[in-house]
Length: 256
Image (tube, rainbow, N blue to C red):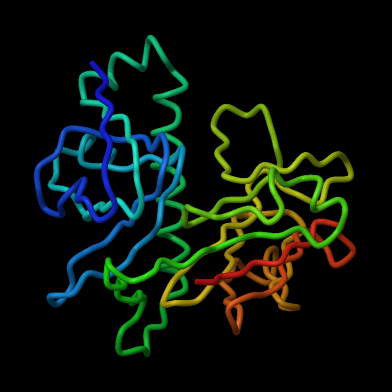
Protein backbone atom coordinates (compact mmCIF):
# COMPACT_ATOMS: atom_id res chain seq x y z
CA UNK A 1 0.00 0.00 0.00
CA UNK A 2 1.26 3.49 -0.88
CA UNK A 3 0.54 6.07 1.82
CA UNK A 4 -0.02 9.79 1.29
CA UNK A 5 1.06 12.19 4.05
CA UNK A 6 0.54 15.93 4.55
CA UNK A 7 3.06 18.08 6.46
CA UNK A 8 2.92 21.65 7.76
CA UNK A 9 5.88 24.06 7.46
CA UNK A 10 8.82 23.00 9.70
CA UNK A 11 7.43 19.47 10.20
CA UNK A 12 10.20 16.84 10.26
CA UNK A 13 9.63 14.10 7.66
CA UNK A 14 12.90 12.16 7.98
CA UNK A 15 15.47 12.40 10.79
CA UNK A 16 19.16 11.86 10.05
CA UNK A 17 20.54 8.52 11.36
CA UNK A 18 17.09 6.99 11.87
CA UNK A 19 16.50 3.61 10.21
CA UNK A 20 14.35 3.73 7.10
CA UNK A 21 12.73 1.38 4.62
CA UNK A 22 10.63 3.96 2.75
CA UNK A 23 11.20 6.39 -0.08
CA UNK A 24 9.09 9.43 -0.93
CA UNK A 25 7.84 11.40 -3.95
CA UNK A 26 6.76 15.02 -3.40
CA UNK A 27 3.23 15.58 -4.70
CA UNK A 28 3.18 19.29 -3.79
CA UNK A 29 5.15 21.74 -1.67
CA UNK A 30 8.86 21.99 -0.88
CA UNK A 31 11.29 20.36 1.55
CA UNK A 32 14.79 21.18 2.83
CA UNK A 33 17.54 18.56 3.07
CA UNK A 34 19.96 19.13 5.97
CA UNK A 35 22.80 17.35 7.75
CA UNK A 36 24.13 17.74 11.28
CA UNK A 37 27.70 19.08 11.49
CA UNK A 38 29.36 20.31 14.69
CA UNK A 39 26.00 20.93 16.30
CA UNK A 40 24.64 22.92 13.36
CA UNK A 41 22.13 22.11 10.63
CA UNK A 42 23.93 22.34 7.29
CA UNK A 43 21.72 23.02 4.27
CA UNK A 44 22.19 20.54 1.41
CA UNK A 45 19.32 21.17 -1.02
CA UNK A 46 15.71 22.17 -1.58
CA UNK A 47 13.41 19.70 -3.33
CA UNK A 48 10.00 20.43 -4.85
CA UNK A 49 7.13 18.75 -6.68
CA UNK A 50 8.09 15.55 -8.47
CA UNK A 51 11.39 15.10 -6.60
CA UNK A 52 12.23 11.96 -4.65
CA UNK A 53 14.08 11.43 -1.38
CA UNK A 54 14.86 8.60 1.03
CA UNK A 55 15.59 6.04 -1.67
CA UNK A 56 19.20 5.38 -0.65
CA UNK A 57 18.35 4.02 2.82
CA UNK A 58 15.65 1.85 1.30
CA UNK A 59 18.18 0.28 -1.07
CA UNK A 60 21.29 -0.12 1.14
CA UNK A 61 19.63 -0.67 4.58
CA UNK A 62 21.84 2.04 6.13
CA UNK A 63 20.50 4.81 8.44
CA UNK A 64 19.12 7.99 6.90
CA UNK A 65 22.01 10.12 5.62
CA UNK A 66 20.20 13.45 6.11
CA UNK A 67 17.11 15.06 7.64
CA UNK A 68 14.18 16.24 5.53
CA UNK A 69 11.92 19.06 6.74
CA UNK A 70 8.85 20.62 5.11
CA UNK A 71 9.49 24.25 4.13
CA UNK A 72 5.84 24.89 3.23
CA UNK A 73 2.61 22.88 3.17
CA UNK A 74 3.81 19.62 1.61
CA UNK A 75 2.15 16.40 0.46
CA UNK A 76 4.27 13.29 -0.15
CA UNK A 77 3.63 9.72 -1.27
CA UNK A 78 5.49 7.09 0.77
CA UNK A 79 6.69 3.85 -0.83
CA UNK A 80 7.85 0.99 1.39
CA UNK A 81 10.64 -1.23 0.05
CA UNK A 82 8.14 -3.99 -0.74
CA UNK A 83 5.89 -1.50 -2.58
CA UNK A 84 8.78 -0.36 -4.77
CA UNK A 85 9.71 -3.90 -5.70
CA UNK A 86 6.10 -4.42 -6.79
CA UNK A 87 6.27 -1.19 -8.82
CA UNK A 88 9.17 -2.62 -10.83
CA UNK A 89 6.63 -4.85 -12.55
CA UNK A 90 3.36 -2.96 -12.21
CA UNK A 91 4.49 0.66 -12.60
CA UNK A 92 7.96 0.92 -14.18
CA UNK A 93 7.64 4.73 -14.45
CA UNK A 94 7.71 5.05 -10.65
CA UNK A 95 10.70 2.74 -10.37
CA UNK A 96 12.47 4.63 -13.16
CA UNK A 97 11.96 7.92 -11.28
CA UNK A 98 13.86 6.56 -8.27
CA UNK A 99 16.63 5.17 -10.47
CA UNK A 100 17.03 8.52 -12.24
CA UNK A 101 17.23 10.28 -8.89
CA UNK A 102 20.02 7.99 -7.68
CA UNK A 103 22.06 8.41 -10.88
CA UNK A 104 21.65 12.20 -10.94
CA UNK A 105 22.73 12.57 -7.30
CA UNK A 106 25.81 10.45 -7.94
CA UNK A 107 26.67 12.67 -10.91
CA UNK A 108 26.20 15.84 -8.83
CA UNK A 109 28.29 14.44 -5.97
CA UNK A 110 31.13 13.72 -8.42
CA UNK A 111 31.05 17.33 -9.64
CA UNK A 112 31.14 18.70 -6.07
CA UNK A 113 34.05 16.42 -5.11
CA UNK A 114 35.98 17.32 -8.27
CA UNK A 115 35.65 21.04 -7.51
CA UNK A 116 36.57 20.96 -3.82
CA UNK A 117 39.54 23.20 -3.02
CA UNK A 118 42.16 21.00 -1.29
CA UNK A 119 43.84 24.12 0.18
CA UNK A 120 40.66 25.42 1.79
CA UNK A 121 40.21 25.02 5.54
CA UNK A 122 36.65 23.92 4.88
CA UNK A 123 36.61 22.29 1.42
CA UNK A 124 33.14 21.73 0.06
CA UNK A 125 31.42 23.30 3.07
CA UNK A 126 27.88 24.54 2.49
CA UNK A 127 25.98 27.34 4.20
CA UNK A 128 24.13 26.81 7.46
CA UNK A 129 20.37 26.50 7.12
CA UNK A 130 18.47 29.63 8.07
CA UNK A 131 16.30 29.86 11.15
CA UNK A 132 13.10 27.94 10.22
CA UNK A 133 11.09 30.97 11.32
CA UNK A 134 12.80 33.35 8.93
CA UNK A 135 11.23 34.35 5.61
CA UNK A 136 12.30 31.89 2.87
CA UNK A 137 14.02 33.01 -0.30
CA UNK A 138 12.10 33.05 -3.58
CA UNK A 139 14.10 31.81 -6.57
CA UNK A 140 12.99 32.42 -10.14
CA UNK A 141 14.04 31.97 -13.76
CA UNK A 142 12.76 34.55 -16.26
CA UNK A 143 12.96 34.45 -20.06
CA UNK A 144 14.68 37.43 -21.67
CA UNK A 145 13.87 36.70 -25.34
CA UNK A 146 10.63 35.66 -27.08
CA UNK A 147 12.06 32.17 -27.67
CA UNK A 148 13.10 31.82 -24.04
CA UNK A 149 9.72 33.05 -22.80
CA UNK A 150 7.90 30.63 -25.11
CA UNK A 151 9.84 27.68 -23.70
CA UNK A 152 8.89 28.28 -20.08
CA UNK A 153 5.58 27.40 -18.39
CA UNK A 154 5.32 30.75 -16.56
CA UNK A 155 7.43 33.87 -16.81
CA UNK A 156 9.00 34.24 -14.35
CA UNK A 157 8.96 30.62 -13.19
CA UNK A 158 9.50 29.94 -9.46
CA UNK A 159 12.26 27.43 -8.70
CA UNK A 160 11.43 25.18 -5.73
CA UNK A 161 14.04 22.43 -6.17
CA UNK A 162 17.83 22.49 -6.02
CA UNK A 163 19.73 21.38 -7.96
CA UNK A 164 17.30 22.62 -10.65
CA UNK A 165 17.99 20.52 -13.76
CA UNK A 166 17.57 21.97 -17.25
CA UNK A 167 17.72 20.01 -20.51
CA UNK A 168 16.15 19.34 -23.91
CA UNK A 169 12.75 17.66 -23.98
CA UNK A 170 13.09 14.02 -25.01
CA UNK A 171 11.24 10.70 -25.00
CA UNK A 172 14.22 9.08 -23.25
CA UNK A 173 12.69 7.22 -20.24
CA UNK A 174 15.86 7.71 -18.16
CA UNK A 175 15.92 11.48 -18.68
CA UNK A 176 14.83 13.69 -15.79
CA UNK A 177 14.77 17.49 -15.90
CA UNK A 178 12.75 20.02 -13.92
CA UNK A 179 12.73 22.38 -16.92
CA UNK A 180 12.44 20.68 -20.32
CA UNK A 181 13.02 22.84 -23.40
CA UNK A 182 11.65 22.07 -26.87
CA UNK A 183 14.57 22.54 -29.25
CA UNK A 184 15.08 21.36 -32.84
CA UNK A 185 18.23 20.68 -34.88
CA UNK A 186 20.61 22.34 -34.95
CA UNK A 187 19.88 22.21 -31.22
CA UNK A 188 21.33 24.59 -28.65
CA UNK A 189 20.08 22.52 -25.71
CA UNK A 190 21.43 19.08 -24.76
CA UNK A 191 19.35 16.42 -23.03
CA UNK A 192 21.40 16.95 -19.86
CA UNK A 193 22.43 20.61 -20.09
CA UNK A 194 22.96 22.43 -16.76
CA UNK A 195 21.88 22.44 -13.14
CA UNK A 196 21.22 25.58 -11.09
CA UNK A 197 22.68 25.35 -7.58
CA UNK A 198 22.18 27.26 -4.34
CA UNK A 199 25.19 26.80 -2.08
CA UNK A 200 26.75 29.00 0.57
CA UNK A 201 24.09 31.65 -0.02
CA UNK A 202 25.09 31.94 -3.69
CA UNK A 203 23.39 30.96 -6.95
CA UNK A 204 25.54 28.97 -9.33
CA UNK A 205 25.40 26.88 -12.49
CA UNK A 206 27.14 23.58 -13.27
CA UNK A 207 27.33 21.95 -16.69
CA UNK A 208 25.93 18.40 -16.90
CA UNK A 209 27.77 17.30 -20.05
CA UNK A 210 26.17 19.60 -22.63
CA UNK A 211 27.52 19.86 -26.17
CA UNK A 212 27.56 23.67 -26.52
CA UNK A 213 27.89 24.67 -22.86
CA UNK A 214 26.44 27.80 -21.29
CA UNK A 215 27.31 31.36 -20.27
CA UNK A 216 26.98 32.45 -16.63
CA UNK A 217 27.14 36.26 -16.54
CA UNK A 218 29.62 36.11 -19.43
CA UNK A 219 31.72 33.23 -18.08
CA UNK A 220 31.60 30.16 -20.31
CA UNK A 221 31.31 26.62 -18.91
CA UNK A 222 31.02 23.22 -20.56
CA UNK A 223 33.11 21.29 -23.03
CA UNK A 224 36.88 21.81 -22.72
CA UNK A 225 36.27 24.66 -20.25
CA UNK A 226 35.05 22.23 -17.60
CA UNK A 227 31.71 21.90 -15.82
CA UNK A 228 32.12 24.64 -13.24
CA UNK A 229 30.31 25.45 -11.04
CA UNK A 230 30.35 29.20 -11.69
CA UNK A 231 28.48 31.43 -9.22
CA UNK A 232 26.74 34.74 -9.91
CA UNK A 233 28.30 37.66 -8.07
CA UNK A 234 25.04 39.08 -6.76
CA UNK A 235 21.45 38.01 -6.17
CA UNK A 236 20.75 37.71 -9.89
CA UNK A 237 22.48 37.05 -13.16
CA UNK A 238 22.03 36.05 -16.81
CA UNK A 239 22.24 32.45 -18.00
CA UNK A 240 22.58 31.70 -21.73
CA UNK A 241 22.01 28.07 -22.67
CA UNK A 242 24.09 27.06 -25.69
CA UNK A 243 26.47 29.34 -27.59
CA UNK A 244 26.54 33.13 -27.31
CA UNK A 245 24.05 33.47 -30.20
CA UNK A 246 21.51 31.21 -28.50
CA UNK A 247 18.02 32.67 -28.01
CA UNK A 248 17.62 30.69 -24.75
CA UNK A 249 18.57 33.53 -22.41
CA UNK A 250 17.28 33.71 -18.84
CA UNK A 251 17.63 35.85 -15.74
CA UNK A 252 18.13 33.85 -12.52
CA UNK A 253 17.12 35.75 -9.37
CA UNK A 254 16.73 35.29 -5.62
CA UNK A 255 14.52 37.62 -3.59
CA UNK A 256 12.76 37.72 -0.22
